[in-house]
Image (cartoon, rainbow over all chains, first blue to last red; front, side, top):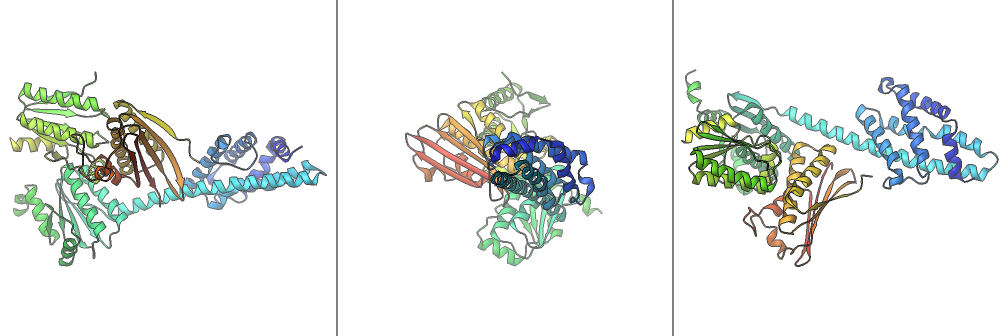
Length: 282
Length: 117
Length: 135
């Protein structure tokens, strides 16, 4: 009998008992009991063993077809754990904790044949290591996606767009702008323009100490996009230093209106939207 | 053959584009619009692209052509409802849609058309 | 490892629509933001049309990939058409051989992370678009 065959037999015989021991080890480690039910975990473990037995039982190759079912299953398990908030250890443990109960059974099944025992243990160990590492990778990717989205949400929340008047929005930018943040902020401004049906958006940069080329370009692109959509933008709070930077960078503001302060920009916006008379009569 | 419907709203025409247009459909639309303007003597045309998810250079060219042809036939065109993602992509592509007037929605588009009559 | 690459024909107009749809579905499945989806599908449309019109028909291969924490899509457009004689000129903003706005190639470059253009007169053209999210 080969190591491969021994592994196959051991994974098939008395599967329920194997699953029970395996599940017990995991439950003793998972901190938040509510994350997965025991029956849910049993099901996952049983499916894993079924898929494992159906695989080539050699070195794991994530890219090849015979391993695709097992690979997809592991990706799904680790992704969902990543989304639910399992720790990395808890997720990797899904595979690694199978080792102890499995090795005991392999040792017993091999009996006096120590060479067979060694070979099958080595085979099982290497295979489970590969699968465990793959699980960690998938988990990592999912966590990165979750974090990225959370960062995006935070960025949007931290730069609120304010409605100054009917049809007039203001976006007060504060602090140093980096390329990523500027993009997120600009995208949310354009969406707010659509959501509120505003004709004019005032981008106030009074609170921005420096403007580099990238940020200036993002600003310009946003203004061009807003105009394409049918709205106008006014930049306010342009200090002399920033005006110099813009000229030195060769950024062409073209027809974009700029005002030294928000009040002047607001007045201009009222004129443009033909609402100045409403304010003057207050 | 599928055609995009052209509605008459007073002295204006309203065209709402809701499908992912293939090139032939776009060309047919151009023809239909020019015929309709000539037939009705419409003074304004509203092109509602609020359901359009992708505007590439071909569609961009179509919008410009329609505006130009309509103007020659005596009608002003306003393209309304461009989505932010589309606008950002057009800017990145470098497409400026020269000569095309835009508005945020049909209401504002009609206000703009009435103002220019 | 991601699924195997898929090849779609670009032999007629409805193939361009199909190509857009295929790429769009994939970007949605990969969880890309709306802006990332729009940019990439628009680039797909530009190059697919270029392959059909200038390349006189060809194909597009769609492939998912994963590399150092980046997860993305690679599109390869190939045709056996006349080829592009002057690559530098073709990539210049505003250049056009048709009556178009001529921004298809250079504009698309700005919508993706990686853009590769290979062409030989009389043999054909191969354009690769790659876009990813992540680091």
